[in-house]
Image (cartoon, rainbow, N blue to C red; front, side, top):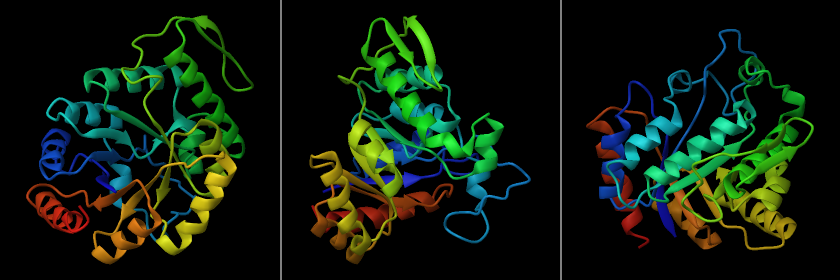
Length: 274
């Protein structure tokens, strides 16, 4: 089982370059970071975890700028979005950003994607929350075309363009791995488009039947990465027994040296399973 870090990188937390270097030096294989373009003042969508929306949601850095900074000071670290809100993203710019990160990192980009939960946020991007799933599916298909075809074209309900040239192409072939986030509603997306399922803080006892369900739907052994895992031996043991590919410990968005102290603790837990 692989071990990585999931976090929100903000303007108040450790900068992405020293954070990426420290994560790699502590022996972790990956860094997945969250994205929110903004948070509307008049927000009515309830926070999925309950209670008040944490301050980190208001302050996230652009994920591809942050991951590129981490890429320049690391050699092995997988650099992923956890998750990119494709319902709020132009497919041309997004395809170019991921491919550029993959080029700059020498093939270490991972594209974690989701539909989002903040209806007011996505509405500001012109997205109808009621059709965001179909929109995301089309944008992902269009991005895959842009990555893999010299003359790419796409004709759908939400995305429509005649043949275009778009470079750079990703270093990884056929393209960077697509980590599809979400619960059961995302399983058809995982089955059709995903290279892996990115489960969000699902406890092992709930995750076990869901893994069976998504793999049955996909007709293959879909790899599973779990976002936001508690850094305790008991929690990790539960996921190890399920055979998940990777667990991502959740790193609080602290400045140094607090962030480094958390990494020290996480590395001690991971070492017990290596």
